[in-house]
Length: 168
Figure 1 (spheres, rainbow, N blue to C red):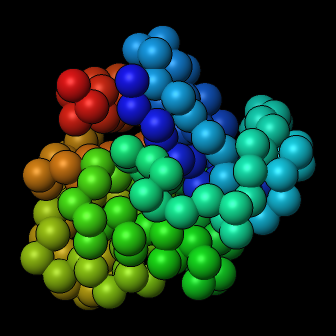
Figure 2 (tube, helix red, strand yellow; figure 1 turned 135 degrees about the vertical axis):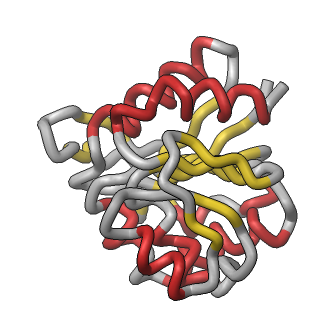
């Protein structure tokens, strides 16, 4: 059983949080939702609700085996806070599994660690990743060692399968 951190706030893309979290929990993994306020109820773009488990100040990357970055507007908001960016950066530097879908890969731009990494993202994020030095593909799921990225909710079956494969 792996411990998975999830960085998320309001305006997440509903299915990009709920589907991977369900897939992880169904396989017995422990999932922790992290934001700036523990106990806060957040709302997705389409009305899904989730409750934050803990704050970014109360956790460290060493507490977790993997990291999930759902899309929507959530990643763009959180990446303005260096605490979240440093959290993501620590996972990449430690070579731990990182799973990002849609706008989730925006975090990687802020870390400065995109150069030479192969990934995908939502249509409007792909050029940003390219200009940050990533090798960008337009495929449902891209696996670069233990970095798993995907484009949209339509890709969730492939994304979830690749994510779970990294945790075996």
